[in-house]
Image (tube, rainbow, N blue to C red; front, side, top):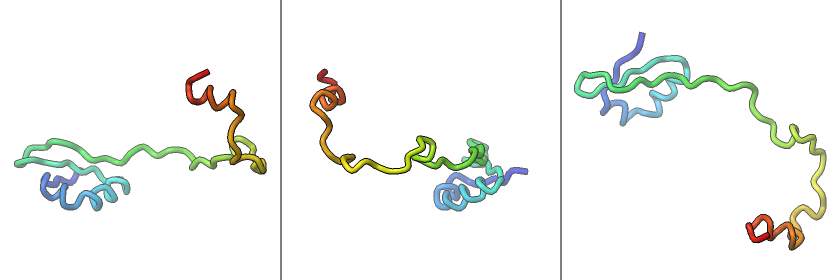
Length: 80
């Protein structure tokens, strides 16, 4: 069953309401006793991403931070 919370209370305690919703609760926000919105848990995603591992990177080249060749730089800037 959903818990009803006034708009004023929702504004002053939003972070706690978000935590409750993330834990699975449904919270209905009311204005002057009239339901206006419902705060529900967001759908869960799969496993957290592991950047770089998906690309199989094992090392970063020594020249990684060096300027790009002029032809590539102009392409990135939309001039070529």
